[in-house]
Length: 159
Image 1: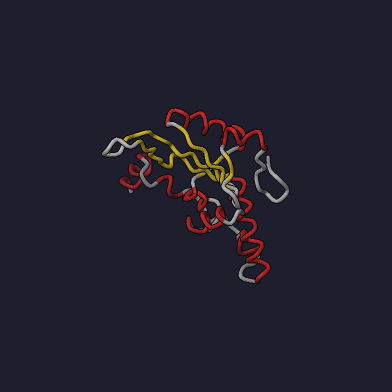
Image 2 (image 1 turned 90 degrees about the horizontal axis):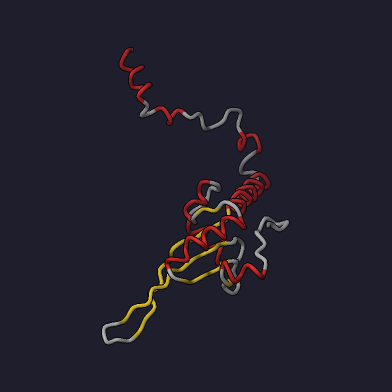
């Protein structure tokens, strides 16, 4: 579910599954054993659609990972994190819980909305024009798909 401002709406009843939000953010944090991580991931992906890691946001918007984490901390982007907890003992027998970040998801829909927001601001400031953003011909031609093709290698040997 998405709200009008392109932030995913997480219903209260889903907090039991995805975790409670960190105060002041839209980061939903869940802790549990490693055996639960696949069920948590399936629930998040089924309910909220495609996700990427914070580094994967760069595929959709021209931003850095640091900018993604800052946006999450400021509450301007939704994120879902699963921390694997493993019980262990310290040297002198004191129990301790080891926490490892297992999965960290950011919704693709919010990444695309962020890109649109950045493009709009760039046009408003006069940094770019709509024509420069869209271009007359696409930047991606697919030539890189042939670089290691047996067909291309055979064709270039004949010449």
